[in-house]
Length: 497
Image: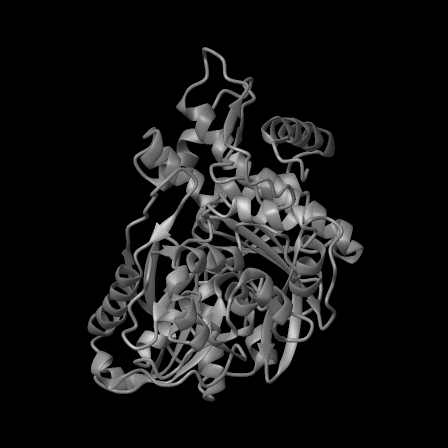
């Protein structure tokens, strides 16, 4: 039997999934790794731990399937985006921990750039808002911290990359320094209309061009793994940032199609086709995917905290023992109590973009308990999804009746998905295969080598498992949402809003 190996390198864990000829996830192995919080609002990962976890899950999934590496026809990689690394070219050794997409340490850099009237130029070229979320200010922070090495940065003795680039570099034993267009579009260094690194922004951030990876199609020849890792060389042919891979895995290939992924954060993306759609509602314009030299664009809304709020219930305030328990406890909440939990643990993303906002719970009484807090935590995911969809509708009036396709770990929660459908007032479709992010990377890799079918057939084979129909009337929905907007407004701090 032959398989495609999909590496799904996420924010809290690394996974390896073997997809068979029918694009079914046959075997899976997952390994969590440490989250590092050096200061308030700072989030880091150990690059060596990421690398070791990836190698471990890849080897372990082959052992679990009882197959040889020669039975893998191709590798696809999907990754947490915006997370930033710099490493020495010769040794491959990182100069610092990876700075994670959630990290807010570069807030002042963003404020200074905004004060210097740079935001409009950056937004026009990259489609992104000026925020610590993206890679560019993270790179600048690292370069400034190691300024004594700047001549070597300029010569290309040190390399920059997002996680996909770092993994490709390590897997190919330093032969390939590359990324794909989706990951490049999230760095805030890439001109998404001209499809190249922006000289103006690189100069502004002090990022030497020799540090930057080559930008390729999402399905392309990214080299071959070093035989010393898995025993044989395996081609790497698919690369996409996690949300773009999920868009592909959900077969959202037509303009107007919407997917929403619920993991650590929540990320909704609507396909806008070949048109670079500018937003008027604080969404992000991004590259959905690039195939055979042709770019498809999208609008995206990013929520920083979705599944992470359930992790907080478990690990932070310890009122649940596991994620599944949250929905069960929420069902016991007192209907007469109305709590709102704004999970701005690392600021608020779209459409607010307030990096200084912090989490809060409103409406607490003496009778409030863990059931009410669990319900408010899960409801916050639905409210934030509505925030994104409302912004998308304002930018693209033609998508009012779009059905949203959902995926990610939290999409398995029927309670949460039903509440999202209730708040949106429109159907929510959950696919039979929830591994859409890994599926997208696998399809890219397998399609490139002819192991899988083309876009049309892949799209035709997409099938839903459950459709959640809205059950809440319009008046009650609006009352709930008005309460949410009031709660959010009480947490906002930035003059930008």
